[in-house]
Length: 225
Image (tube, rainbow, N blue to C red; front, side, top):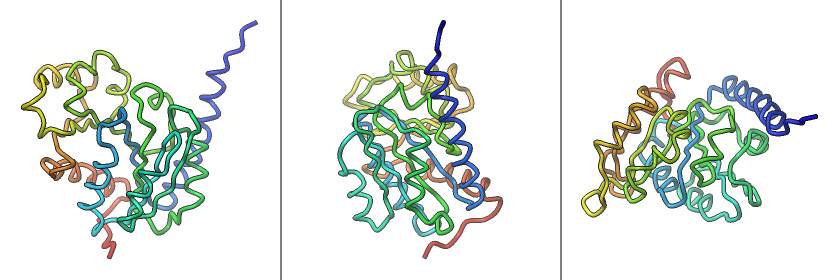
């Protein structure tokens, strides 16, 4: 007899993700799940996104990390609600964790929730959180060969941020090859070269995100002030 535990776990996760999705839809909140390896610049990207959009949208952040509260504290310093999830060793977030996190937020007072998943290029791809879009961040220092090694995360992402673009002159990063491989894996995903640290290229990313938010809400943006 074979017992497929993984299939059962994913089925339970998907059921809870559907519940999360219904709650987000009822409240008119757009949710984006940011995935990347450790050090790719997820938190810096979130802070750059907040700076660009906080006057248009009411934003909260759900921070996933194995142990610390460092990133949630950085977000909170900017006056943005941030809920920390510590997975205690798990390499990804699951829909049950997101459900507990959103119980701590006033969804009716939000337009956008940014989820920072645990730093990992493999595990987060398997788990539906109830989000509207998964977005993958790769930084230039990680190398242009990552799509060969971790194709799954590129295949499921609706957009790819190529972060730390300002460092491309000092790393052996073949952007043409990177674009070619990502294009074959996922031709629908736009690639946004940017530097969250300097602000270079952030405008194109937040324009794409704004279109997705307003499409999901079926109308114009809100004045968050």
